[in-house]
Image (cartoon, rainbow, N blue to C red; front, side):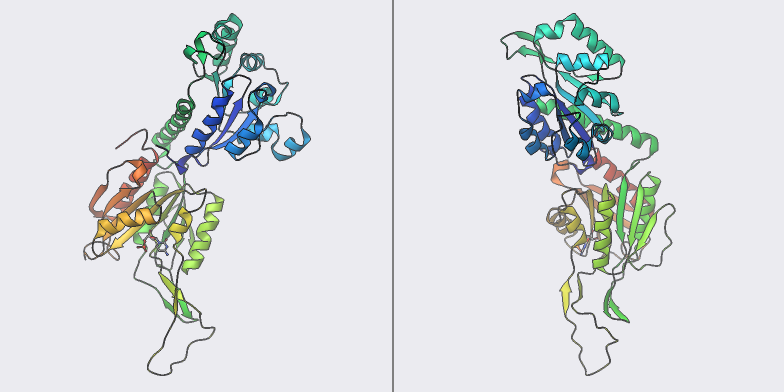
Length: 421
Ligand code: C5P
């Protein structure tokens, strides 16, 4: 199954390909890493280019391929130092004897060996070579040096080799390597979450409250949403270590501690600000706002004067904010809400799919004891199919407690492959 997990869309991998027949497997590795949402840039040594062309990697990674250390054109785009800083992980696969020896000796006579010295990112090498070359004392000595220097060495597999030999030296399959990378980032994130909070380091954007759609300079169309649920979620996300931006419609609530609040009025303004926040960087987008479905087609420039027994106002549909954000190529983890008066779960499940959400929380607003103006709520949470997570019933509780449980649900979904429910 292919997971297009937005959770990795801010993680940058440099895949360094060196000279060896296993280089063909690296083309598939780029695909698998991209499937997980990673940004991939490929660096190739001269040796690698004898086996596979840079064009292949350029097409698969969607980025220019880096081959030269002192190429003025390449350096003008992303030079070796910028490349070294860009990486969250450098994966050398396949790693030839020659590259391993260069790393061990600290040489810096081509792009990859220079990059190795210049990066602070973890470096992984997946050696692939003839079994005799693998077993050779200098190779083993150099690998020991790399391990001492903090490099993670992925053991080659045993089997028949392209040269006809049988033994250790085969590069693991691309899917295995991609999974190891994914698990590494999952574990790193889990460690951070344990230490600093469930959403530590995440940028969360929340829409809350109603929108107000002007009819003329003094009148508007709106709804009864108080924004309480959205504000409670903003507070819970901040307590969980997230950096929170709250896009608030017109509500009379105090801004939760530590939360950056941006007041907006109409649905169009809320969408504009949401898109702006997406550009600034957003890991999780939570849409609690009760956005007006329609706005007035032509807002009158001056106050409409009373005349006749009827007044016809033409309305046009507002954009769906959460669905628009969910369609963007670099989409965050998307959370929507569904307030319904009947067939609650059925409608919510439909919206989850239609709006391409990762998670939806629904409640029955026909119940007088929960919902809109109440301080209490009860919800059912559904996850998109690819998460393979059971729905969760959040029993009636204060909006603060419900918000905390929603934060836990978001965290669990972001980490679902390590801790399946
Ligand atoms: O379609 P419906 O309004 O019931 O969907 C509710 C969900 O969609 C909520 O998460 C709400 O914030 C979001 N929404 C939106 N933009 C709209 C309408 C709804 O973001 N125009």
